Image (tube, rainbow, N blue to C red; front, side, top):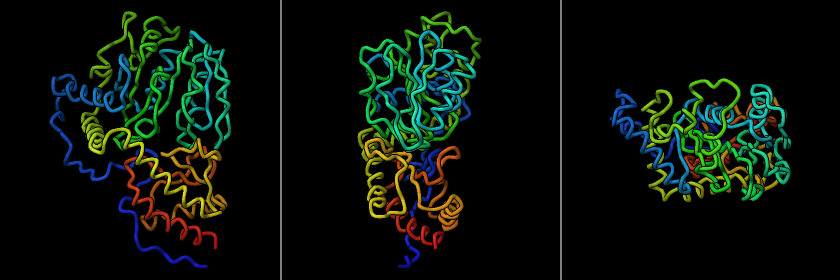
Length: 374
């Protein structure tokens, strides 16, 4: 039976997995731009940076003693800074099931050239056996596989009495998934993901155990200035109080503050998590009713509620046409699977995406399928 072309379109067709959709009601004219044109080291600049740091810690309900810092180069820069600064004194377990985690493994073995490195891996759509993580080792893992749509179920695989550090790339999980902070020694993310902020800046969250590592271990390799978190064997505390390593964009900082204020206004991180889970439910109901579309993540318990990856009963060429049809009709932009992932769709369902926009998208998915499969 032919499916008629839908009439109603999503009010916001931006479903990209990064940079992600701006918050509902976003208006650049509402940003506090008082710090623009001022030095980031002026009182007004430092106050703006310190406020986003303290608001981040408050909203995420971080444990006492955890530090939040703003660093260069998005989540990638944050992860590289941590790996180059902290890895080396222990064996490393690298858990990955998609391209970004695989990239961390490549950097550890080919750039840092560490020897005692263990891979704990799985194919796209699967989660590896995390019980293989050795609590005596450092452990690097991605909480949510942005390019595979597979997340960890919880932090139960992390031992409370671990000797090594846990280093978690959580760039598409923070503010959208519950994080067991006591089990995470280092967490990195970028505000351009879940909160729809502007790019180029990363966040690192350090536990007291992570600080102890930084102050007791000096890597054998040269450290670029932009990676240095310590001076004279002590943590550079200023980084965690608004004195950034290099010059940040105060416009991006104002944009991030706007996103944090929005999270507060909707009821905090619990509500931003709920909004994302409700968005996933919209797609889950649709997939359950249609045999031609499936989740890449086979286990429902590991399905991401942010970067939702879907496979289609179409050829690679037909999938390209499917994506183009939706873009041409200004219904959905940037929803193709990541270049290293299996061919399919990746639809962002973080909290800045309105449920009504996903509900409006659903009929268009069916219509586009019929257009390219006929």
